[in-house]
Amino acid sequence: MDDSKNRLNEKKFGRRTFLKRFAQAAALSSAASATGCIGLIQNNEMLQLKWKEYFKKNYRLMTPQEKEETVERLERLAKIEKHMDIQMSSQNPINGVLFGYAFNLTRCEGFMECVTACVKENNLDRQSHTQYIRIFEMEPGGMSPETGNGKYFHEVPLDNHFYMGVQCFHCENAPCIRACPTKATWKEPDGIVVVDYDWCIGCRYCMAACPYYGRRFNWSASQVPYNEITKKQHYLGNRIRPKGTMEKCTFCVQRTRAGKLPACVEACPTGARIFGNLLDPDSEIRFVLKHKKVFRLKEDLATDPKFWYFID
Amino acid sequence: MLILFGFGMLWVTADVYTEQRNVLDQVKQSTIHRKDLNQNDFAQNLPRQAVKAEMKYQGGDFWTESRKDKVERYPCYTCHTNNPEKFKGAKEMVHGDILLDHGGADKPLSCATCHLKDNPHLFKTADTTNIDMDHSYDLCGQCHFRQKQDWIGGAHGKRVLNWAGKRVVKNCTSCHNPHSPLFQKRWPKTYSPPIDK
Image 1 (cartoon, each protein chain N blue to C red):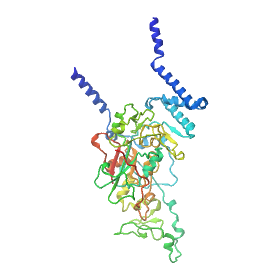
Image 2: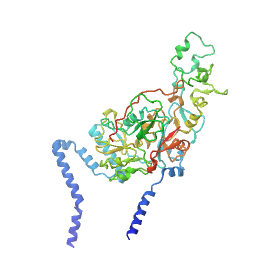
Image 3: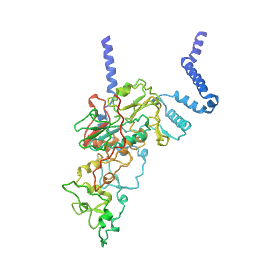
Image 4: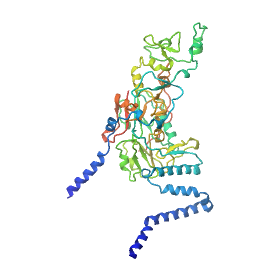
């Protein structure tokens, strides 16, 4: 009897608890040595927040309350660290919505206003010149962006050329999701493939698995000038990503779940980009699918992208 | 035993993959109309300068951006009265900034192709009905009927701000200069760095 009681007691202070406490002690002592004791007292709140942030769950396992809490913590941390008032949301997908995108190859003229709008909206790193969208200048007859020129910089449109925009296609059967060893990336019910930046370990398997070059790796937290930061953020979207994580187009989840258009669609000066709800037979995207000649890239891979190209 | 195990594994993996529903199947089975969605989620006021289009698209009524408030010298009849004061060079002085490059070299358009001579704020049609300046899509659609069909459906032009809620789209003249409608060549806004591959 005594033996089993002891064992029970032992279990209470198990490996996990021990590690947790050990890590706590180590973090505190290292923080104390790094900042000095006075700094420690001043940054007490920040340390507590960071501590809780470090041990939070994967976003998909969080209860609504936990989502609320982590969003609040991140807002508070931005206030303390960067003196910035951001509004972060953890808005859930809307029922009966599946987002789809269409790109008009006849209309795009390569002005690249979508790219600048995307960089601005999603707080992309200005230092490494990260871009989620690439526009390729294509010879007539070319069907694959690999044959196009993605580095053009001259007056556009060039005669006898067309332009093809490529970004994350939000595949229904996405290879990147299956490649992720930590389940840090998944498909939301409204069809958006998202990344939990705090669960990503930066192994870049998903980048290798994506046949469309849709994902980007950051080598540093995004460097954005203070007054250019987009303050309306989403946990799964355009918040300032921590260093060493994968990021990608999220169909501007912070905008589209509020009913607005993605930044690229809004910025497009030629109306080449069409966005809407695939489940709604009245939507523009459904009109395009019904009445236009559409195709998807590398359909033979059965990735089932929700991004169609069409010609007028 | 091994064979059985193998079949079992196959069955399990097959199950994982068939769980995925094809997008097109989902699209074909969907019966959710815009009005069925909770419109309160997208409570949206119409922009101030929107007019109701005279036709319906597949989802019902829609709105388009107005034009009159963007024309500097509107209303036209402040100058174009019944007894206009005629002086030399008036046309160049007032409308000299308009570059008319519409219709190509074969069939160049003139002012009077679209504008009524007596009431220039109204547009001509092939028959005798006149078109209001805010509803210029009716005028443009006489020649560009395919673009008009696409515009009504949503494959040409674009929505303003929202994908959900009330449908407000850009007018023809929101994007095209009606007098020289072709987009001019210009420098792209940015460039892409090379991919390291």
